[in-house]
Image (cartoon, rainbow, N blue to C red):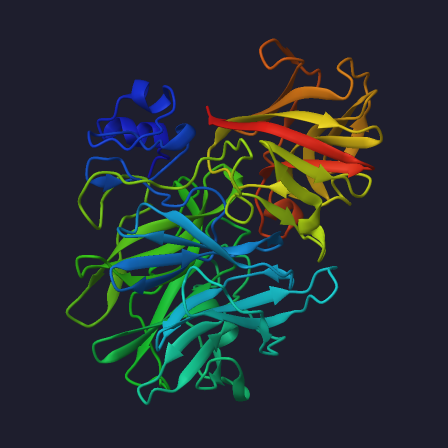
Length: 531
C-alpha cells in the first residue's frame, strides 16, 4: 500500500488545502472543516461527519478509556511529567477536553495506567518504574476519587515490582482482579486498594511467526471486556517500539474470568505489516462501546517518519461476527472514517498559547521529573510566569514542558532574566537529550544533543523574545528585541533522531521553558502556532 500523507488524505476527502494550511481557526465551524483547530493545531474531527486519526495527536500512549454513562474519559502514560495522568473527557470519542491531572506526587516514571469505575468510585491503577527521584519505586499503585474531577487520593503502593500494565476486571462472582503483563493476574480486595494472595499465571499469549520483525515478545497491556457470554482478554505483543512491524494486538476469550482462555482465530487483530503504512508499531488496545451502541477500539501508534511525536492515540471501528469474536476495522487508519456520533465538530484540545493570566499548570504545563518542592519554583502574577532558577543547565533544572502534536510548528516567548540567571526555550526529550537556545546577560547558550555547544555574544542583554521553529524536524531559532523585527540565529539543527529508538524512555520531543543558575526568569506571552 503506498504511503499516504495527511495532506493527501484530506485532499482526497474534498477539503481545500487553502483552508487546511491557512490561518488558525479558533471557533467551532458547522460547515466542513479541515483537521485543524485552535492555533491551527491538528485535530481529528473533519467537521463533515468523518474523522481522521489520530484522535489525540502527540504523545498520548497506552490509552485507557472508560465509558461512564453518556460520557467517556481517557488517560495515558505520562512517564516523568508531573502533574501527570491528565484525564480527558468526550461525548463522541473524537473530540476531547482536559478535565484534571490526577497524579501530583512524583512516584516514578508512569507507564500504562488503568482508569475504571466500580460501585460509584473511580480508580486509577498506575505502574511505575523507579527513577532517581527519592521515594519512586518500580511497582504498581492505586489512587481513587468519588468525582472524576477530584480530589484524587494519595497513591497506595500495591507492591507489584515484577509486573506492568494492570488491567482491572470483575469476575462473574463479583471478585475484583488486576490482570498483569506476561499473562498473569492478582486478586484485589473488595475496596480495590490492596491485593490478596500471590500473583498467578493464567494465560499463555498467542505467538507470532518466528520470522516476523519484532522487538521482543513482551506480552503486556492486558484489558478485559465482558460482552455476552464471554470475557475477552486483549493484549499487546511484539514490543512497543523497535521495528515498526513489531507491536500488535491479540485477543483471547473465556466463559469465566478464571479461564481457560481460547485464542482468537484471527490473531493478530492489529499489526503494521509494511513500512509503507501511515501508522507504525500499532498496539495496546482497549474495546469501548460507542455512543450509538456500536463498538470501537483505541490504541496507539507511531506516525511514519515522526518518532519524535511519540505514540499517538488512534480510534478504529470494531465489528462483532457471528462466531462471537470481534475484529478491528479501518485498515492502516490513513483515511477518514465515519464518526461514532454524527454532528458538528465540538471543542477539542486546548490552546497552547498562554498569556499566563490563568492557571494551566497540570493541564498544559508539566515539570520533567520534578523534586517534591518543584511546584514552588513557579508563580503567576499580572500575566507573567516567574520561574525560579535551579541547577546549571536543562539537564539539572527540570523544565516546564507541553505536548505538541503537529509535524510543523513554532513557539515564542518574551524572556527577562536576573543577573546570574540562564533561561531559554527548548525542544526536550529528556535530561540527556534536548536542544534549544538560552541566554545570560552576556552570551547566548546553544544546546544540542543534550549538551552545551557554544556561547556566542548576546547583544540584547537581559531581555529578548525568542522563537523556536520545528518544521518537520528541521529546527531553527530566531531572536528579537521587540517581537517585530527578527533575526535568524546562526545555528540550525535536525532532530529526527531525538526519539525512543535512539535514547529509550518512550517519550517525545516536547516544547518547553527553562531557567538555570541563580535568581529567576520571567516569561510573558507564550505563543504557539502550527505551520
